[in-house]
Image 1 (cartoon, rainbow, N blue to C red):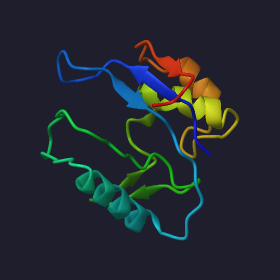
Image 2 (cartoon, rainbow, N blue to C red; image 1 turned 60 degrees about the vertical axis):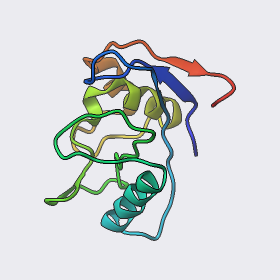
Image 3 (cartoon, one colour; image 1 turned 90 degrees about the horizontal axis):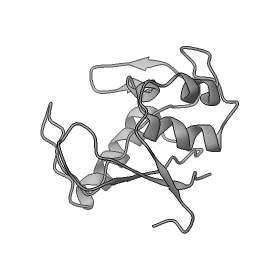
Image 4 (tube, rainbow, N blue to C red; image 1 turned 90 degrees about the vertical axis):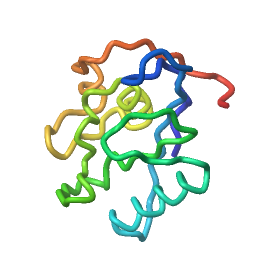
Length: 130
């Protein structure tokens, strides 16, 4: 299942073009580390270069926000994503797609998490997609 695509301002990198954000909820037989590895591989194939500890301009950014209701804390992977509840561009598409789904750490629904989100950056849903 896909959310709509949302257009919003770039964050943490000074004045830049707007970003496009969406959420995909899927079933997979991959475990969380293997899924993250595949996501990072797709980023690299599409021209993403990561610089450790820096936000940089990028053609694509794929994050593993949740892995069902699992909680993982490893040196290379933290699930749920540690900043998921601070980002409107994450929560708005999640609340659209799975409004009653509960965050496995806080227990809040995605709709409530969106209401409580400190990020007030404006987002515009795109009716036609990209």
